[in-house]
Length: 459
Image 1 (cartoon, one colour):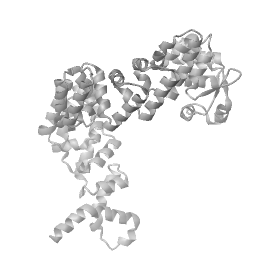
Image 2 (spheres, helix red, strand yellow; image 1 turned 90 degrees about the horizontal axis):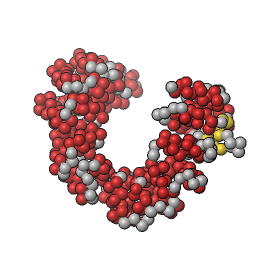
Image 3 (spheres, helix red, strand yellow; image 1 turned 120 degrees about the vertical axis):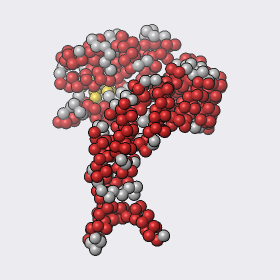
Image 4 (tube, helix red, strand yellow; image 1 turned 45 degrees about the horizontal axis):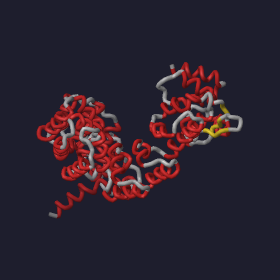
């Protein structure tokens, strides 16, 4: 019995103890023979030098395995590298499941890897999938992996779709028999179409990995709220509810009600855009205060554009309102159309609300650009670069260090003329790329030259 306990204690702790001693004080163990410390030392050394683990990770992994010879571990690593696993993949793989090094590569590992490859999973996706979930390789191929794979295929239909799902959600095979299958059956029983179920598995599979009774209660609740199972909002509503506690939901309802909303108005907006209940109570309150107390908008109007409640107040809503107020004051826009101006993309907003009127109202571009914290307005009408840390780091990649002080100290540019010239002659170019590109070109060339140079680059 004593020998058994000693052997168990040695296997668990000796590698850590001896390796730490070797690192910290080799002289203190000079009386211990090499044969005594050879095995634990070999395990840690192999994990560090052959598998790429850090010393700390190697010490932890060494508690789970004892490498007596490198023959089998070498064969395992060679197998993974033959399938395109990088050093990073291998380090991640062995850190999570060090026992793989002692597996039979040809009998236990290769048949499982070949199964995935033969069913359309490419080597890069396979490496990502297995390094994230290496314990899938200890499962039985015939009794677990193949049945789980076939269930996924019954939902996704093609090998290409399965490969895509594995790339996005590497753990999908773990939950398929236990929860995903039963939860899909629940959705079907409520009339959710196959096309919608397909989208959930591909894009939001975690929704289906929950405990079945819990999932069923929330599906029933979302149906009772009036969501149409045929609508994508059904999925968004379910995801939103599943993502918060009951107390959090009630706290958010209380915020809306404090601004005069009825429960029917809240649920009506929630059905249109469930994400309106996603922000924290403080953010919801701040946005409602701006819309209702400063802009005098009603719940009915806000409900028409519920996405506005999830947009950044400082970075998007307020700057666009500044532009829109100028257009309304000049009789170019009606106040009732403001909601649409807030929800369109950046490029559409610039095109329809800024560039269109820039000849008569040049200040619009300044108002729009200012929200990026990139510029301040000079009395001369020029724009001056200010220190915005994010964009500073981006721009410093292209601006030589020797010019940094002058650039951020107040280098003045005629931004508007160059930006407008480029904007009118290009389509489908991201506006932020234009901002940064124009700044760079203007730093090197006069405005009119910069415009032509940028057109050459973008076409």
